[in-house]
Length: 68
Image: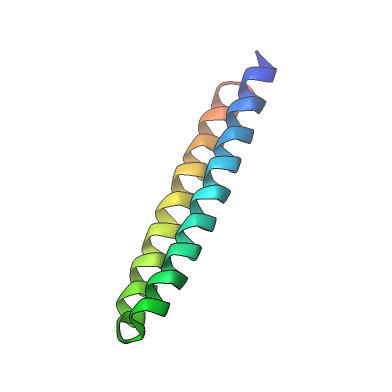
């Protein structure tokens, strides 16, 4: 049972890290293509990174509730 919770949190951390990494790469690519849109791209990237981290924190909380 504990192994399942640890695996769930580990996969959530991996998914969050990959998601934020892809987000940063694509934001840099978009800014390189259109430097004039750097402000809105940065704002959207910060909001999306916060949402990705929120999903990880939710998973961490659910893993602890289930007995991690």
